[in-house]
Length: 235
Image 1 (cartoon, rainbow, N blue to C red):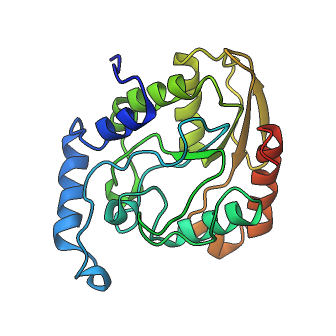
Image 2: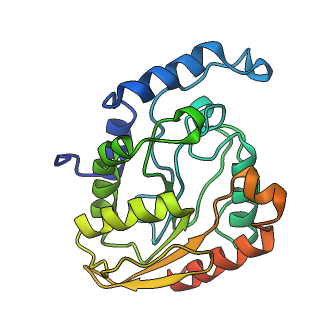
């Protein structure tokens, strides 16, 4: 399906209105009604969470999907959960974020030359979107890449799910994806030919499972982000 929007702000608005996946619509809205006890007095966003960052970004960070009580609550990617705490601290440390924390959508955080998005824009049950939901939401990621094409120079993918989804979207948006596809791994770097050469880097996801066990340390994440910033000429 072709997306007719012609700007990143219009894309973000269109994403936030999507109701294409019945299971995800039901879950995100149920979570927004029942809430977590610690957020009982807050009004949850409860809608698809659009990407976040400038429309002329040189670096794209791709996650998995919003967290039920993170992005689904605050309305901004990685905002208000522990995964975001790790990511935004690292972005701040390498000079890509204006502050080291991200609490709510109006907290003044700004990203420098960097945009954050996901292959699935609704919080999924168990943090596990189905392949059909990933493919349905892929139309938004493809259009986002098309709109970012003039300035995009590098992408960091957090986890294998996002890696596979982004490779598909990049191929549909005009980049040449090798066959067999490059395998995901932390620290992997691939150069893709296309409208402009794109440097694609892999990192383990900033999930609590990875950060609490030490599979992904702050230093490991900083190294990948600093390398990506240099490749995107943001250093």
